[in-house]
Length: 120
Image 1 (spheres, rainbow, N blue to C red):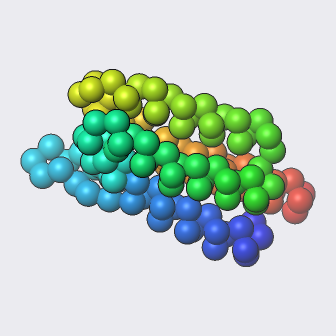
Image 2: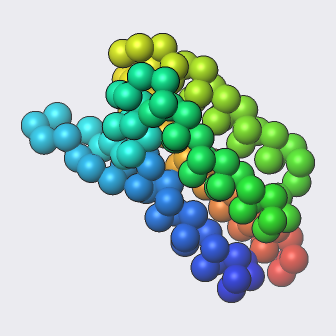
Image 3: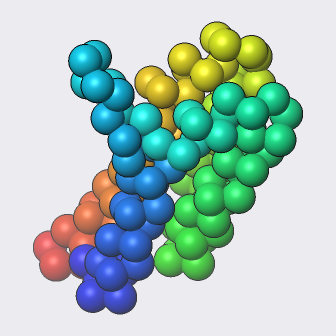
């Protein structure tokens, strides 16, 4: 993987971690992030969570991710936004879905596959 891509991917990992799993809920051990916490604020919370999610997708595009991958990342965000907008059920869904982490993993897998293809 290109060094610049590795540094950018590490940054995106930190963003996803903050949004999806920064805090551990005591006793049950489930990890939540700002996405799940912001989702508790009706209407505005889910809207605010779209900013970092969109940033991850924008960076993936800038790093050369193909349109199909960017579209798949958009679908992950869409699912998160639609289901996340349902009171209570959406908040529980956000804790498990972790769209930001999914999207960074998709990008990492793509970049690693490209790196293997180039060195082969």
